[in-house]
Length: 429
Image (cartoon, rainbow, N blue to C red; front, side, top):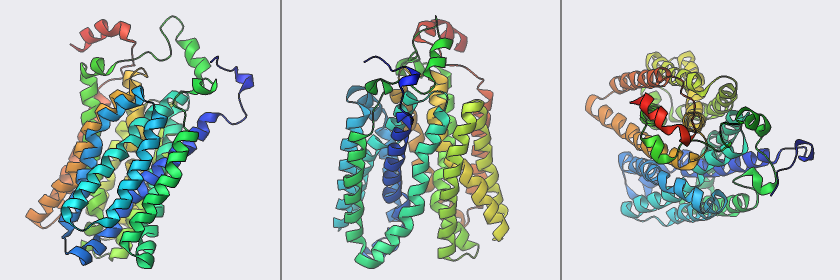
């Protein structure tokens, strides 16, 4: 289909409708299946007598499984298309979440959580990042920020909503309701709104005219690295390592900040409210960091965000239970936490181009998700051994500074076409 001229474009670029649909999908996938899960801890304790440690293992297993399926998701995006994959993934994730309402044993709970996580990978950052990157160039960072803002909004809405539903109808019915909502809303959005490429609607990516003009004589707009080529470069491992370190900190703090604050004298209700504020501020971080990455480079923005994460955690550790210190932590760490999610696909495109963005991002997610899963477990083990969070939080502050250094010192290497592979590989060697 021939691309439309700029004059023939609709008043609202269709890519923004795609962004809105993807934001809603991430809202539904992150809210009930991640942020709201903390609300079910006490009901599970009361019903089955499980410890909090046993219950929290499910979240780490989910993060690990979701990450391991990242490369598979990347391949499927290329073979069956993001729209079909997300449609099926939305249905199956909703069904899996609903089936958690039939939980009667810890083994069933773990198994269903892992099944849900596997399908959740089909509707999260790998296909979402690939679709947004296809639709936008000049405003790719802003588009990714707005899309991933759905994650934080899901936390703001579904944590209190799940608590209200549990009080009204019980935890079993709450799972049924949430699962049914996901199936009813997510699948239609994926099938009827999402389009993987703007060419499917006779459109060009936003700002594509300028991109094509710049690349005259350099190759097509889709040039970039294949997964195999990317894996042969140090850049892939440096970027993956940096985000892995940052996600380890992020996962640990999200799970353990509430008990840390309770140890500082905050009530469970206030600690939960603070966690909700961190999630809400993360929405601002996603949008603002994406906007900045469009105007400068994703590399310095990412390094700065990693440093902000370290500063926020240091403020929390030194707060001594003061309200001012906790507020500063929520502002700084919340912003950086949200930004990390939006910047990962931006860095993948920045380093390796668009040719194989889904598979390359999927491989990165496999690595970072494993560390995201290990972060909470490590923090819990250190706390059990020492009776405090001080040592592990200091370790994560150092980890975030290391992540920032890795990104900043890697150098600013633009994406190259595969035709230039040999020369570039020689440069790396």
